[in-house]
Amino acid sequence: MVTGAQRGVGYGIAQEFLAEGATVVLTDVDQDGLDDAVAQLGPHASGLVADVTSLDDMTNLYRTVVKRHGRLDAVVANAGVGDSSPLGSITEKQFDFIFGVNTKGVLFTVQAALPHLCEAATVVVIGSTASIQALPGMSLYGGSKAAIRQFVRAWIQEVHGAGIRINVLSPGAVDTPSLRIALAGAAGADQVDAEVAKMGEGNPIGRLGDAREIGRSAVFLSSDASSFITGVELFCDGGMAQTG
Image (cartoon, rainbow, N blue to C red; front, side, top):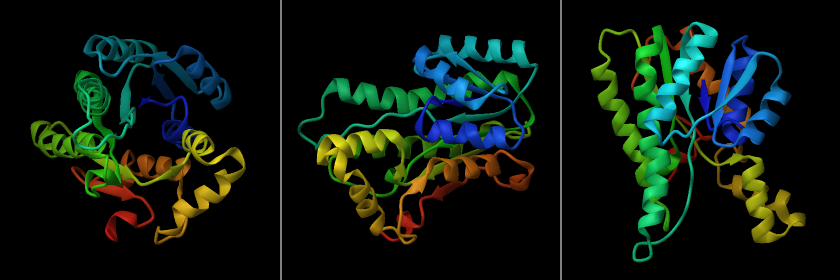
């Protein structure tokens, strides 16, 4: 199951799990967007509307998933939002929105899944390089991602002996439709490719990431190839977090 999966990184993660033969349930808050994503992904994908900030929604979601499919092997807590404001202008609404989705949403996604996870199941929490790289105006976003890193440090001890592995996967900037829409609004549609290239220049690999590259790392952390890895934060960012 992948949250926030109708587009962007979540969609790329779903693509990679499907490519490896998994049956994938996508969740998001928009039915039309989910329907479009499922239609593109094919018969082994399905979609269920759920709000990760609602414990009732997530509890009911997992009951439906297990009723339909009989088991739950892997959860990817990908749903997340961003906003920026410097200290002095942060509003209560912004705080509640960012921490509600990015932090409370991850908590409810994982907590509601626990009773349904199979033996040797995995949880991958999508973090961000912003958890360790402080950028002006991004304290809310970075703080919300740093919080989930600490969640996972505690959770792996709290599920001791259950056979469940929990890891954080932290992307850097990823070339997604949402990013391109934002760049078009800021710089003009004809400048999007140039802006994407410019953003990637400071990365040691020299480019931005692709959503399916994040997906391949999520599959790795959910597979037997990582069977002795738990509690880590894996940076899938082209090396950017190691240079700042």
